[in-house]
Image (cartoon, rainbow, N blue to C red; front, side, top):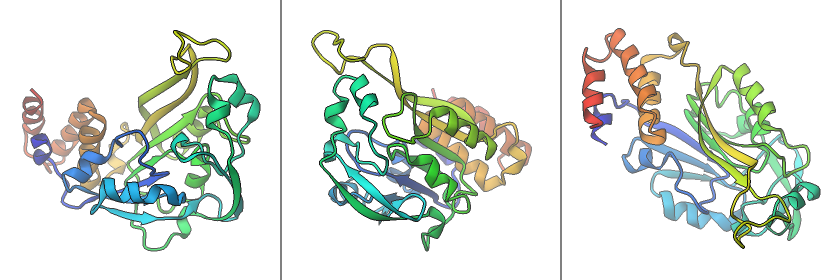
Length: 278
């Protein structure tokens, strides 16, 4: 990505992925690791997933096998590894039955008592600048107990639920209100997952979606209308994240314009950036 050479930050971007199991997706932050621009702090309490994480991201990864939540002992509801539905929240049976296939996906094979940690109690973590979380309903609790660690966070990618599959799971609305109160603005949806409502199946395949929203991957960024709150290196890092992770070229150009205004980048860098995209 030669475009990034125009504005690359001088320090690596500290990335955190909570629920980092490498199951069925290439994470948005992988280009930063491939370019040597970031380091990943991967949190995954499910030991079945650790080897795959190391294989996917070594040598740019530090593994933490903590269960992040509220610092108290909790019941872990273990579903099958490939399902991705192991959670610290109890599956909500009537919600699982509402969707085709989810009663099977969310089947609890066994439970275990685990001691959870508050994010702010994890030692030796640097200030996190890019956060990704997909932890089956526990995202908001982790952030609420990690405000010191996340005080410098520039972008957050979260899985949010429209129909909650777990008991006491915050809705998208709950998460959105909290994020805005912390100074973030919604930037984009990376994915909107729809699913078919039981018992209707389209084309003989229960995975073919109907219209019902299930969950979304949403990206929040530090308020782009208040760039004065960010120092120069943070602007460079957010520009790099916007370009490399989310293909948000207009956001990147907006940040470059602010860096030009401050005299950090030479006049015309934004134009060079546009040309590099062709």
